[in-house]
Image 1 (cartoon, rainbow, N blue to C red):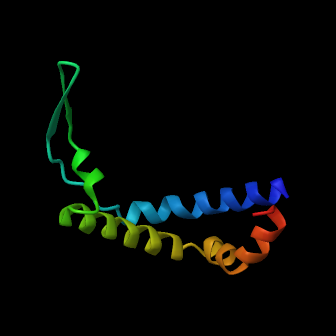
Image 2 (image 1 turned 135 degrees about the vertical axis):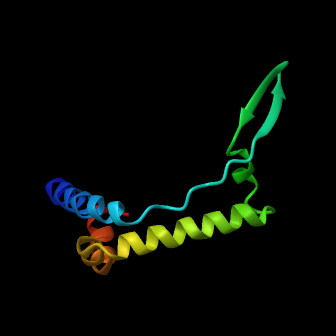
Length: 95
């Protein structure tokens, strides 16, 4: 069973690398956010992404990221085979 998981994982990776060369995930814009903690100023360029419930820009980026992930995974034949067999695989793995 562990060997099957390893073989499938290796197959996904082998198929994923060429597809990533053709397309890139959406880049998160940098919004400098500065906080002070214990007298120390800390700048975090991606802190704004933590406010996804209320920030339309964060929601837009998250949606684009999810669409990219779905498109990339759906383009992999091994993923589509795994996805179609997932309920059976999950039962065998005990989840």
